[in-house]
Length: 73
Image 1: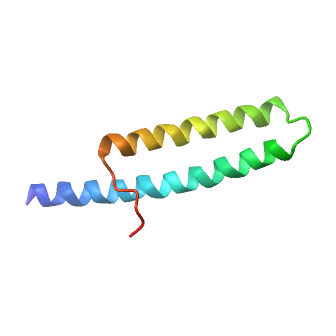
Image 2 (image 1 turned 30 degrees about the horizontal axis):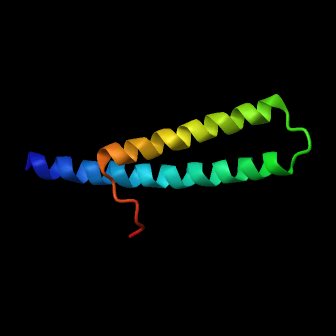
């Protein structure tokens, strides 16, 4: 019984990770587009872009370590 619960928790957390990756991806794309359209982006905007990109890359690495299937079901 214990192993079934562990499997369910792992699947739920992997699903949550994939959802968060999608959210970060959209945020990153929006911020890159904003910086691309800006004539002189402020330092604050550039820092937010770097933080968002770092979060996105971290989540991708975590998904790779967990061997999570990124295909939508």
